[in-house]
Image 1: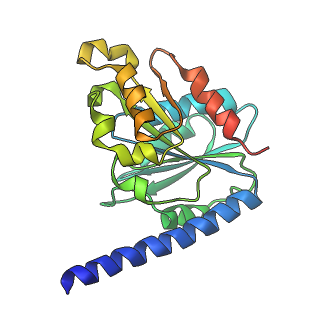
Image 2: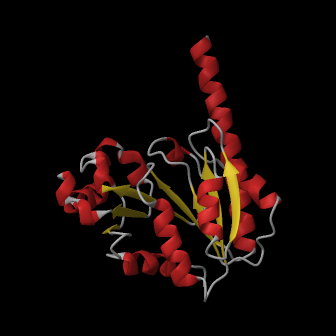
Length: 218
């Protein structure tokens, strides 16, 4: 009986999340906001890649960032230093953002003049994939320092993403990892596009920004 109850609670949580995500998506569509859900493990380079995109795009587009983390203030300060609107969301013990977190952030900030919203999800390769936030595109970022078998160990998040970014390729040789294998594995898992990058060295970042431009609402 306990197991049946647990399953029902989980189903209710997912049903509620889908409803709120749909409402978020309608809000974004109505206001012409393109939303990117940026997922990846701790230390994969999510913040750095978002910062680079901000610098490349902020002269042409109005940008905001929802910074989600156990304690969100640290990354929020980094994003704010680029002159964009930042909505910090501290999740406490939660290992992912859900649609309600996003809805709550939107209630406290006027984003109707925003063109691009980056949502930096909590550092995790498992939980975030289950929760639609109302985004237009999902991006999963992994680094070679996580090992070149990391993609095949967590296939679901790659299957459900529109882009995989394999980051920190400049250190691949030093950690005994193959960036090429990781890119190929992401495609094998079902991700439609995968690119190698080094945020520190600037490698592959043009293609990263191109993906964002291609996804923008016309």
